[in-house]
Image (cartoon, rainbow, N blue to C red; front, side, top):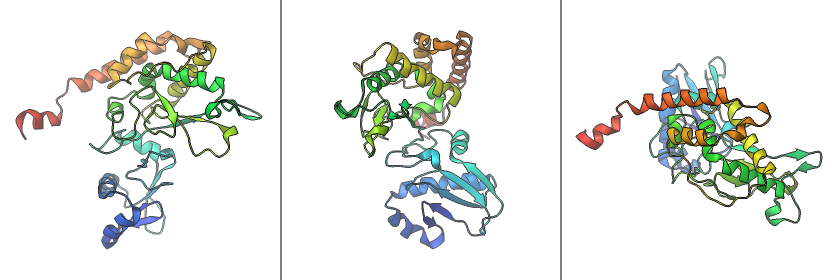
Length: 296
């Protein structure tokens, strides 16, 4: 049976592979990474695989050149005439294979676009302020950035999460924000034509997060910034592993108790579970150690 790989509107298969790589205007390694992931799906029982994403992508649910809209990605396995097979959402694929599955390749983030609004539009908009950002918006941003290190324990709760949050792959590594910058923790989208719908994009989270906990915690952090009129006055380094994130949460979690949304028992249980998961990975030998120390 013919195997077909479709990236955007371009099919990759058989003798067309070389020409398609140039048509896609992507690196050969991007296509190869996609094919490697496709093989894993085939082994799971998918005969025909199509990857349909809004922009050119290097993998399932992952769009290079900024990770735009990867939550809209779809993967479908079925027959050549479209019948049968299994429909797999990109989010489910990410949950199965992780955030960072390939060394020296971009990881998969779960970027969160958000704003506080009324019937008139976004409350983050102000026509006369710099960058059209209201005071409310700046305080909300400051609250999220102020608590971002602790939030990582909820928004990036896996040991694999921190293999993505490294320099060089348009992933955030500090608690900062800017307009149109894909490396910052919070990005103000430059493409917004209607400034009255001003929104912010929180780029730290990934798909291993529990959405109920992560979204609630992010909102509470923003609200805490508004209530206490926080200002963006410091730039801190994000945790480099989940253990650092857990320790940050231990020191900074009072804001999560606002309105009784989180309880102390829940936070304690979360810390206990995530600490155990970190230790389970930490005590196991890593294959790369053989390369480093034994030359194999």
